[in-house]
Image 1 (cartoon, rainbow, N blue to C red):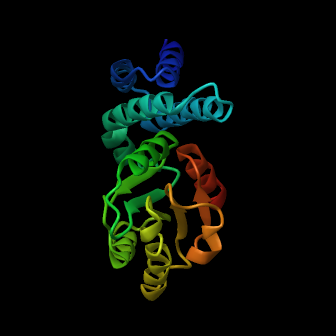
Image 2: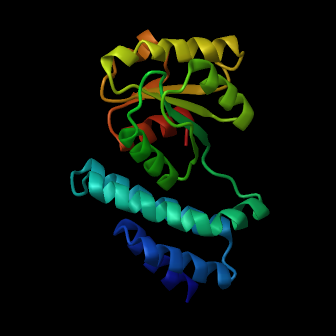
Length: 212
């Protein structure tokens, strides 16, 4: 019975059915299914969403819907996961750099990363370089993600890298950049480890950097 419900949960995730996902997860928890198993099955479903997106079978609205459905499911099982000691694929902080108040793209990346099984902390917009470093230490993250939407704010990207170095954690974290004003050509200039053009590119980049 639980296996059938898990399959239903995965179908609802792929289809972005938020309320159904939340209900399915609650029912699975009530049936005693481990949070780790539920999380693994949800991640597998989101991998399907990623494949559909990469094949142009799904588009940005589909990605957002499934990501939001994943977040709804995670809200239900998070206490269960922490109690059982289950872990996410990794911890990520995201923020738009100092001087940049654009939030939409970053929020989409956040939802997609959560959907891919990462624990994500959103620092918001107009984030100073030293704040990226402070939060990376405080939250013990694996990845620091910085977004620049405007050409004028890309100058902050190498400063984030420098702040991570000054804090003594550059060799302990992966630094990933993104945003409308960036490209792969910015990786070396910013001192970054990777770049993502789309939300799912960001997931794949981080997966590769962390060998997930």
